[in-house]
Image (cartoon, rainbow, N blue to C red; front, side, top):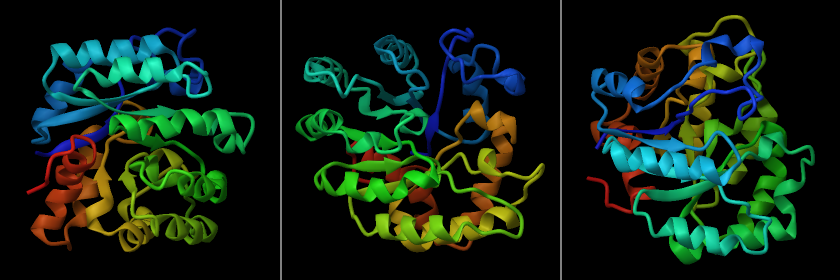
Length: 280
């Protein structure tokens, strides 16, 4: 299967999505499966993993309801209150749904940069292995040092780094600190990385494949083709790129790889990691 491992759906309102500011006008509307479906078809993709964009249980329910009615949504990465003492009841309930593949917390928005090291948060995260679920790690580059500590607390948990940990991408200024620590993080075999969200981290007005090449080269060297996953980050990606443009960029970046390695990045790895099916 060819899978988009990272995209979002929402019915827009300003109360639920306060992060969508006036500078994000293109995002101020509904984005639903009927809007993504023609993009997947045009890109010859078989399905997608829908990832939470709001920290409410109703968001997880919403995404699972969409998945129930649309077979192209092969998995859902939802949200649960990991710091809640009763979080296992929520995890257990959602784990009964075969479309639930993992959970995520928007760590990048927490005012405390050490949030992921909280004992109550880690107690909740630790439960995911009991249900064979994954965890998506959404962070900025500045969170990478504590991410290594966090990952080492959960050696049996499959962790997927979203958006290559959001380096600061600038022309003529490679983020060497990001590169150093992402390489250290990649030494943990249970950690994978999504080729998603890069264009929205570009600090200049424009971008091209050449600007992104050293960041791709770094994660390819660090994680290898068996632990990289293609993701669109649609519709957030529309701030900088159309869907087909980003897929073309990723396709160009991975073109030097073997056919089997390209197939792994474009879906085989997501199938194996999220859906627990052996990739071809």
